[in-house]
Image (cartoon, rainbow, N blue to C red; front, side, top):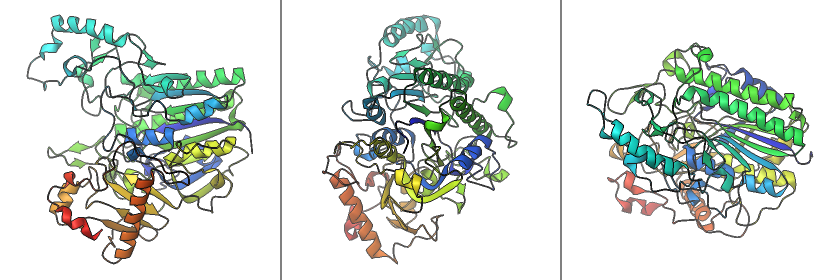
Length: 533
């Protein structure tokens, strides 16, 4: 086993399992750099994010703990949100820092920065009047000048809970690319003080989704080239200092804003900006891989490529005015939730597999066999235990409670390491999976594809049970045929919640009480109907 390997964790945002051509041979988006990486490493075909949305999954990556054990029980960290990771909790960065690693984060954080000012909505992210209805009062020159003074005071203060307060030595990125403040952040300070309103032409239409203060001339096309440049500078500096490093690269793409640089527009051939942005994201990944080779550290670097959740079905799509989206990709023959075993059900936000089954590929020269494949269940939370075992570190009982080392799979992908994995939707709905069976504790998708309120009103049962070996598309609900299995898996899930952990060790406490059912999203359901479970 190689000692003190460097680690590069390249996390894309909202990329579907089927958006990598090596995982979806029938897909229309071609990803040559990801494909090359897969030939050089190991492809994981049954990998999952712990949540079907952004912030919770990032929490699990960095803490090795299921997101629903935290204070965030549904949804994501909101605009200017408080830090989700507790200041005393060990992170992957903190673990490696103890072993002499330099730890860097470049890209999107979205775990709460801890802004040291009162978040007045009208000052920092007001609503915008629709086009043709006049100028909002806060856009007038007099009001804007007053607000500039407030922005100067607010953004001159350091953040209190961002990456450099959670184990990272260095950070350069944005909090959330389509939310204010529209500026870069280096370590714990904004790079300059935002002094203009984001131009309204950059709002909506798969661009920014929140109004707010921005740096002059801010534009979204600069983001991906900046991440590639900063990553190269970071790798170069670490190689020259001959020190082991962790580089966490949470990309802002192919999530919105769909701002594609000119040389990539139309390159996918699909007349779709999401597809073009996926091509540009693949190019950035290739540039990072080239940096490792150019600076002579490729042979002792574990590189992991992963997505934080599934494809967002509403991106690059047409909306009918009633919340329904007509995909622009699937009619062209590209299915972002497809894979080697067919089409996975659902998309980002859902408890169905399309919400959380993700592309996951790892390369470690001399440890992982090139061109290998692993069909065992793995989860994004497994990074903590994997690196701990690789470094010979023992995790304390209050760290990495839901992290299972993947190191044995790197050596022998045929022997399972996980008995089960817990999934979580944007609405806080639970699903639990063992090697064969998957139980979903809601009547619908648990997310946006088919809301639980709709499903309950349609008279669907409160639980779904699927045989994932024979029905990976989750098309046949077997809950009525297998009631004993339903009860067994609910009992297991209750135990995992009560224990505060899913791995061996001393039981721990969840940060807040955990609601297994969240009936408020389906008010037509009689709570007494849960008595059978």
